[in-house]
Image 1 (cartoon, rainbow, N blue to C red):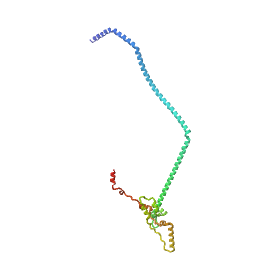
Image 2 (cartoon, rainbow, N blue to C red; image 1 turned 135 degrees about the horizontal axis):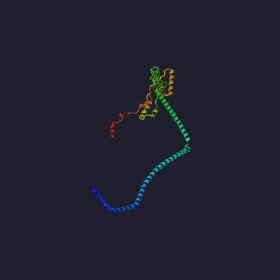
Image 3 (spheres, rainbow, N blue to C red; image 1 turned 180 degrees about the vertical axis):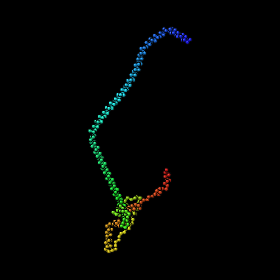
Image 4 (cartoon, rainbow, N blue to C red; image 1 turned 90 degrees about the horizontal axis):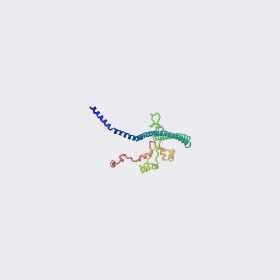
Length: 304
């Protein structure tokens, strides 16, 4: 049934196509003529599109080649320029070095100058070392002299500790095999004699400003009483006593009373008169408790 319906539809279509054949033929020839008429334009358009596209491709390829060629040329020109510059620098360095060494700074003269400078430096260094050694020896010698002088002064001050035939001294103990160095020094020097301080030196010298001048004048006008000395009295005899008395008078007149006093002065651990005077008239040194005010704490609180 379906086959019959389909065959009937085909026959109807064929009949309609037969009736429209002339119209289709005319339309085909019309379209063919139009296509032939537009073929040349379309061909020209296709050629133009193809030429434009191929031109874009070629130009892109040329740009790529140009870019690569530029890179290669840049690298090569940079390499050649650097090589040429290095050669020029080498030539300039050698020429400038030659010119400076020949006309400005003589190489051999400068070498001689440096050698002479090195020798002079060595000589100066040796001289400085010798001078330093000399200064060190001078300092050692001065220190030794100062120590020796201090020992001599100490031996003079401690001369009263010298041992005697009856009583051995402090530095000559019987336990020791040999005397002490201080004992030998005290044997070889003279004892320290106490000298009276002159009044002018006491008044005009460098004294403590805290000591009043009145006390200095009082001490100068009223000196300390001398230490009694055992002066041998002349024997009450005739010619011998007169002669001894005349000898004592001549000694006192020639040496003076001070020198006679020094000669007949007893030995002992005496200090210098200026040191005793400075200790006697030294200024008051108050303690912190006496020097501080009673209201110091309250004053500090008020300031804070």
